[in-house]
Length: 539
Ligand SMILES: [Zn+2]
Image 1 (tube, helix red, strand yellow):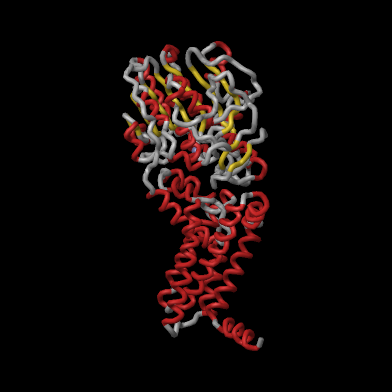
Image 2 (cartoon, helix red, strand yellow):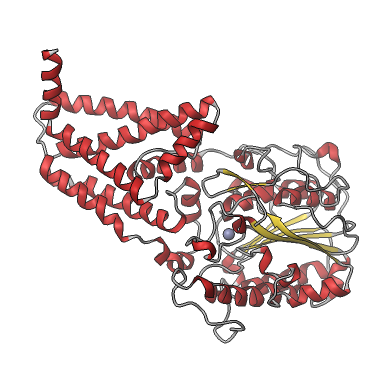
């Protein structure tokens, strides 16, 4: 008994140990208070609702997260004074980034965010910069510096150093196994979360492509053109073609009234609320709620099917000059023409140039399969249209403090960008003779309603509410208006338009929009920015 007590006393007379324990406890409690107990609540939900293996991962990753952070602080306290600047910089970087993420999207950064960050145009980041800055990152940095001053312990024996490194290796192994499982839950501080996300990101980026082959090749040249337009951040209920009070899409409204060459599925459900996962799901036909998200890396892309059916494939990206939507450089093998943001001028008229390019290509030719990733109406919305094109105003000076004004610049953006895009595309209605156009958006948008301060990548229904319509001849028969279509229906619809026989469809897909079996039975699911599966409830 006495022996145990003196051992207990010895441990706490170890300054580094005490300092590390205090700092880990401080930061964890501070962040749980600051961030509204989110982490512990997710942990509790996992313990209540998830299967045993996920519970085990959650417990082990929780121990590893806190443990590796403890190790980090402990070793920092034993470092020579002049080297302690390194852990201070490491902690400052992680706090700055993670506090910014929590402010903007109410969660820590994920590897998907990093993937997006590395390929998002610089201009988008400067626009969103204010959303991603939270001055309170100063607290952990100040706390850490104070602990370094008060509890610094000059290391005396190599014995302690060996112990520290073996502990580190043990915790690193735990963290790495957590990384391999790919679960999005991490219980721990911002520091642990940040330095677990980075290896997971690197690991995912380095992994080679594992896509299935479609395994057939058609020799007859196709007689039609197929165009898939994926818009950016266009929320379905802000289009007048879907009944919105402001006339944001008069060109489509007119078509719907007087023409039988349009079919509108109204408000549909996105596969994900973040651009990268949503695009990856659309291009592979992976079904949220049925399939694992990771299948976006193993399912063949729609380009593989199009090539196998003899189409000339075109991928137009008005947003970036790199692949960022789940495609990898391996997928280039199935893309004949790749048009990048810089080829389209990379300004607010990029989408119109893309429309002109599509018209030029499809009016004189058949056998084209074109996917256009539109530039759309990205935050800040007033940068998506010319200053003199302000139909609705005023524009809010500061989005978070004037949420009721946010729809003004957004609707101006939709009117300028979406409506004018279709005006250019459909200038000559003859385009629809041989060409079918499927239109959707990658995800919706919050528009700062209901007190939220993020744009998308979270779990509210308006972020997953998108338009879905088809333009062309021989459209599917109009059916019951009460069903809910989703991104999952796009891939099989494209395969139908290409006439891909059932026996060549490598994986089961959702029903096609042409399918008589297509209905709203069952829920619709989508992934949030952390790839958590969320059930869609109509708002
Ligand atoms: Zn997007």
